[in-house]
Length: 175
Image (tube, rainbow, N blue to C red; front, side, top):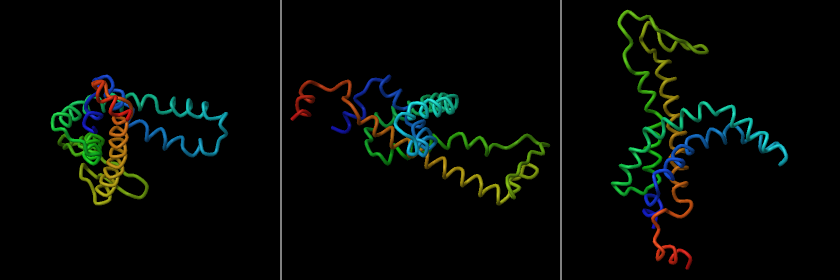
C-alpha cells in the first residue's frame, strides 16, 4: 500500500512535490510568526509578501532539487525504498551537495580570506579552526533543513490517490 502511494505517480506529480518540498519549510519559517500574530484578514497579504520575498531563491532551489532529486527518486523507486528516514537522508545529502564546492582548492597564488563576527574563517587560502566550526555548523543546519524537506516530500507523496491505482485497490481503500 505505501509502496503504491510513493511510487505509483506520474513524473509531473512527483516533480511538483519535489520542487515544493524544500521551499515549504523556508516559507513556514519566514511567515509562521507573522501569521500567528495576524488576523485572518491579513493572512493573504502576509502570504503574498513572503512568497515574493523568497520567489527567486525558491525557483532556483526548486530547479536544483528537480535536477538532483529526480534521479535519486528514480533510484529509490527502483530499490522500492519506502522509509521516511531514507527520504530524509537523501534530501539532507542533496541540500549539502553545494557545500562541497567550498572544499575545492583555490588557484595557486590566491590570497582568498574571509572573516565573520570575531572569527577569521579563512586566512591566505587556509581554513582556520573557527572557519571549520562555521563550515560544519552550516552543514548541520543545511542538513536539518534538507531532512525536513525530505520528510515533507515523503508525506506529499502519500497524500492523494496514486495515478496507477486500480479500481480494485480504490474500492478496497474505501472499505
